[in-house]
Image 1 (cartoon, rainbow, N blue to C red):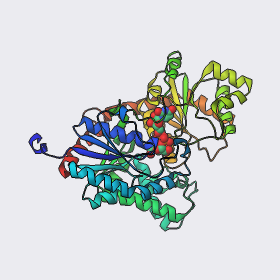
Image 2: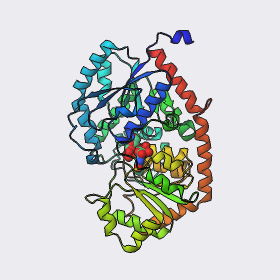
Image 3: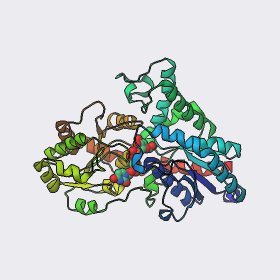
Image 4: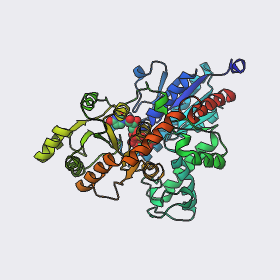
Length: 451
Ligand SMILES: O=c1ccn([C@@H]2O[C@H](COP(=O)(O)OP(=O)(O)O[C@H]3O[C@H](CO)[C@@H](O)[C@H](O)[C@H]3O)[C@@H](O)[C@H]2O)c(=O)[nH]1
């Protein structure tokens, strides 16, 4: 076997999408494959580019994207679809030039690209290079796209129905990842992109584990007849891969060290969604009234700085923050979730945050906002039953609801125990003989077999 492997191409070109929740898992995957003997070149946009000094084992190749002037903060849930299509329009030519030059000097085994960077597919085909697709969401989310195709064919938009989608139970129509698509043409286009990427790749990699989504893994394999590699949670296999755009404030770890076990709720609603000042204020009142301890990632509201906002709060809330709270702009989230003082996570249910929380056995208040987050929220609360479901566009942020959810999160012993069991299963999945570990070995063999 080893002999057969000798002489195989072991160089991978990896193309991440320039968003925090996408770059992080792609660089983690690259670290994992590097540890399996592959050399890695990261081909990336100038916009939101990764910091090469954090990844001395990789080579970095930037290509022009025409949007480098934009700041990270300008990204919101509403402009992600247009960012993705702008990248597709602007990057084909620079990426082709880069790849042409690079492949003339290097033997590439294959290209691994993020589904948002779908323009990579056509360039790779022109150069006869095989591709592997990385989807950074849950596999159930990708399955949901498959069913939206059917629902659209029956003319059932808009998808705000409370009833359950039979094939995706317990997901409801309103949980499907329609992602602010205002008309069915744009949505149809997005659906075609998702399907095409899967069909034209030599395999699809997911940051997930069998113990989370085994039924969906089998379904997706049957539908598309392509190899599927569920190898997550990536972060547990690539612990030293740092790809944060913002500086992580470690002072909160000192604060956590002073708190009692399971006494703190960690609050972080992702890298994309921003809040109105009045919503932040309701959150602050609810947290203060819960009388629980809290570590809160606050990046500011729309049009207001954190300092200005804290000053504007009622005196008793400011006192509560001082006595029982810790506010940071960006936390070392994985370390925070692993800390014994943290008893639960109030999250927007981005897929990375979801996996990081499950891996540490921390129950979740699920406050999904857009895209795949409703799917994840439903999985956490109704499939794995380790969370309390709460949708932000269904409910007005209300201090009494916040107080109730926080108290439930920290007090529900059964939910805590289910979270511990899932943590045990996830840890088993990534150790030798576990499902994710085995899937990784299959992926390595698969790459070597096509090169
Ligand atoms: O203070 C913080 C807050 C977050 N993080 C990290 O930032 C990442 C955030 O990722 P995720 O939880 O997936 O949230 P988003 O950045 O919002 O992710 C986008 O991309 C994900 C993957 O496709 C989708 O699931 C989400 O819906 C989409 O919003 C995680 O690794 C966190 O550990 C920190 O390091 N510090």
